[in-house]
Every structure is written in structure tokens, then in C-alpha cells.
Length: 399
Image (cartoon, rainbow, N blue to C red; front, side, top):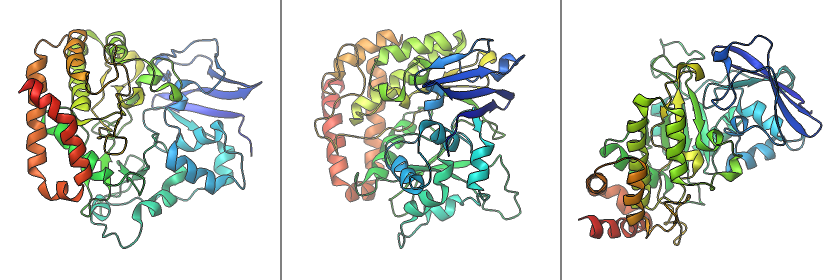
């Protein structure tokens, strides 16, 4: 089966069609399309087509990577050619991150998908480890991938705990992550780092750690209170870059994008949030804070209400790559060690008047969280040692 065209839409209506023709990807808005059916802040509704040699960045955003991509290929390679159009049809058809959906009747007829029953949050968190729950969830929900990232993760529909509640298409979703054997202790690692962000008052999604500390669970943040989709575009998309360019550019370029796409009333708060997020990544030794780990949320393109999304995917990477460096350039340098001075310079870019106070606040949150979870820390001494090595120079410099 070869997909040559996909229908594209959003909550405001049908947008247009994506074609693969003559080694190019072409997106055309439907005739007379409304402005609020635009699929990206970079791609306003127009008569002419948008042509790319590879998938347009907004379509690349949710394509699976790493472990999930490998499992998808294992599942499908014997029967179909696993190409970008097929991956997009799978990842963009069932509650993808953001407000843009794709649809292929050809794919649905071939898959004949069964309704997803969903999982309760309690059942995931109470998993006792007697079976490989994560592998089972990946197997069950892999055909609704909908989320990118190298780290093993799966997007699972949440079934309400109360039986009387009706399970609808507007149910919430859980992002479930596991470090597997490749990244031991990764769930605790992310739980600690995200807890530091929360303790410091940074906007974060709801998140949890399973009782056996093997799974990190996070509720998606690209839905409003009524579970309607919000627009979300990561910084690679907003800079017109392919997903593989996520380690290019700089943190200052992200600040520039915030100024470009956010309305005046959202710029300062988003820049302060960006500074805190970058500073925390430096403190905890997060060498994977790349362009796809920052993004903007908005209701729809014409509303001009974009703001920086909550912090997510913050982990210590030096526990696994001892000499790791920053994912992006920080005022001319990628060294985690040099980031202490770089942050003070970056504060000027973000118009943060009290950077030392902000860094001290993050360090206080770090000490509070590490002291709050001694049992978790004892389970991952290699992670805690790496965290302490990363934070210690900041403790000295900003005591």
C-alpha cells in the first residue's frame, strides 16, 4: 500500500490535502478555505501550494522516532512500505499533539482499526511489574503513535476511573514513558527534574511516577479545560526546520521566535519562562533541551494568543553520557560548565532583570526536591550523583 494523498483538517474544519508527487510533498488549502483552518503559524491560508522536498515541518512534528519507530517497522514492514506518508497517517490520525489531524480512508480500510478502550491512570500507576506493561501498551496503542521523541514513549487514551462516565473522543490522554534497559532510572530521573520545575513555580503538565518507579506518566497539555485541541508547534516547526535539525540554532533563536509569534502581552512572561527552563536544564545537566522540546501553544492562528508551552522532557542526560553538552548554543557556547556565565548573558536576551535571584530560586527548588524523595534517590544513585555534579558549580557560583 502506497499513500499518495492525505486529507488534512483541524477543529475549525477541513484545511486541505497533502500530496506526494514527483519526489515532492505538496500541501494545498481547499478553495475558499477560512483563515482559521490554517495548519501552522508559518503556513497561512493561500491559493498557492506549499511545496517541500521532504515533509513540511508541521507534518514532521509528531512522526515517531527511536524505539516506537523501530516497533512500528517491526509491526508493518512485512506488509507495507513504512514511508513518511504512512507514518504521518498513523501519527496524525488519532489525537496527535496539536490541532492538526490527517485522515486516509485507504489506510483505515486496510487497518480496520478497533476502538481503543483506554487505560485508567490508577491501573498504570499501580502496575506491579509482573509483566512488561510498557511493551504491552506500545503493542496495543502503537498505531495511534501521535508523539515524537527518541525516548521510549506511547500516547494512551485515558479511561475514566468512574464507570458511569462516558468514554468519548474528547477523553484525556496519558503520555507514558519508560527508560527500558537502555536508560536505567530514567523515569525517576524525569520525575525528579520535573518536580524541581514544579517546585520552582514553572508551568508544567500534570505528571506522575508509577508506584514501582518504572514509568513516568504525564497528561498532555495541548488541550483546553473542555479537552478541545489547542494549537501546538515546536520550535523546529516555527523555524521552518526538519526534525533532524533539532540540534541546530540557539536558545537566543528561541527567544527571537517568542518575540515574533507571541502577542505583546505574552512576550515577557514567555521569555521569563524560557529563561527558567534553560537555566534549569543547565543546573540539572539536561543535554537534550533541543528545539523540539520548546514550543508555543495557541487556540487558533488568527487569535494571536500564542504563548510558551509548559516545560516538558527535562531530564539529566549526564547520567548516561558523562561528558554531554548543551543541545543548543547558549550565547556562543554549548558547554554545561560554561553555562553559568552564559545564563547571565542569556538573561539580557530574555529581559530578565534578576537572573541571579531566579537561579538561586531554582537551586533552592533543587535542594528541596532532592531532600523530599530520599527513597527514590537511593534507587538511582548514578542519577543523583550526576545531578549533584551538574548542580554543584551553580551552588558555588550563586550561593
